Length: 393
Image (cartoon, rainbow, N blue to C red; front, side):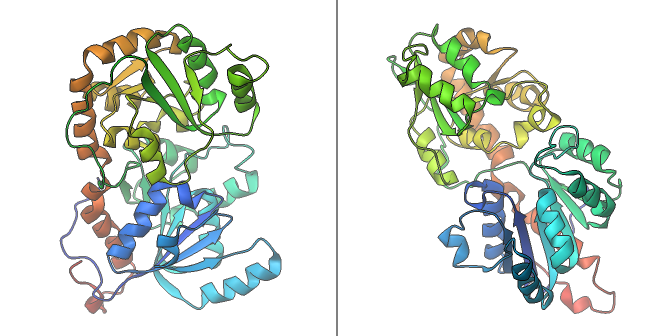
């Protein structure tokens, strides 16, 4: 999980003061951020959540942490910056480039951890990753005390893109789910008429939705349930071909009228499904091609024992298909044969999904090593003359 040996005693005796910094990210729907906040609170550390344009704050978070929201206005920023500067944090954990820039500008901390959720790259994210932010990040990236990222594969891409020094400690942490509510026994495939495959998340051409809808016209005994969120051209075309002017163009596909607001709601949606679809069109970007360990929907599907349909690219094959819980396709047109394979091997694939979740996607597996990793980041900044700050976690 970490790239260095984990010491047994490396955390401070008094609670750490930790700033978690999030900007331009939907806090309420982000499983990694919510899991981290819950973990820090259970450790008894004193958490300040520093937000800028991060959406709704869940009540269970708001009631247990100090929240500082930095507004967009200049005077608001100046006032909140004063409040932040009054505290010297032991540790700051910043999410992605936007959170990193806020942390560097406003947060005083002994150690700064960069938590990468998405691979922001100048060649692939021009609209959400302006040149000024990219340049700022590259100037300061080697000041971090550590990096949290979902896989060694993504760490290699991150380092090459940002010029990250090899000596920066790294903790590999897949996008996980909490173990509560997990399925412990293999599922039984539902009766024909129809069985259901769920697509959870964004409704975009990049996630192959139109192509799968076309294929579903030729798949009998199955229904594709599209449950996500989008307000663009793909959603408009989908609705138009399901119940609009071109109603009936897509068959065996159903679009839900709502979308999940929290990870718990996403699990409720998936509980009655038979198969999970986790498809990203190949070659879009390294961020999508390496998403097998960085996709919340995959952790949700596995937690509930659902076999998966995935793309035949990179870690989707190495992590998921090789574990026996997924069928990797080279194209959506291969879906009918893939579903037939799943029908014939459903119990074994469900059992493999449960096993992979328990070994790789269960957040509780990583908690002790994560605590030690964060403790080491702070400990390296503490003088040898103050050993009283170092004690058992």
